[in-house]
Amino acid sequence: MRCPFCGHDDSQVKDSRPTEDGAAIRRRRQCEGCGARFTTFERIQLRELTVLKTEGRREPFEREKLERSVAVACRKRPIDQARIDKLVSGIQRQLETLGETEIESAKIGEFVMEGLKGLDTVAYIRFASVYKEFAEAKDFEEFAGSVAEAAKK
Image (cartoon, rainbow, N blue to C red):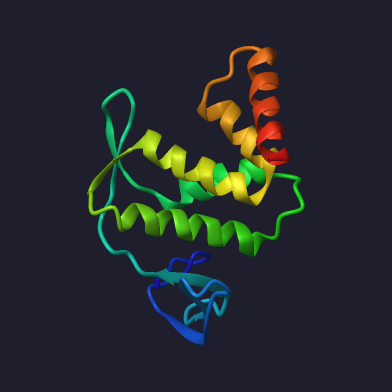
């Protein structure tokens, strides 16, 4: 594994353990060149996924983009990082088990919406405002009202 600090090609694994959700292995490494320590994560990848964007462009699926989107929606909310990681891992696993190599970005958005709905209503509404492209304040009000009504049931 290449050192992120000095670029040296070799590092030594000092500690390995599963993550809290069991979906990855966390490895603590030390660079043999500069001695710096860093952490890597090893995850199972069932298949290579390609995201089909709404304008027809194709790009490789990037877990980091999914993590960033969920993190932005959850920013400043009382949500433990482990729960966010578990949600992202669950969404990625759902996508990989669909049996398709190309997945529409809208489908990914639906999975994120469903996951956030059960995690935090504010994060759910934040993500929805971008995903559903709210244009006016009334769009926001109507959606928030429907979420509130669903929560009462």
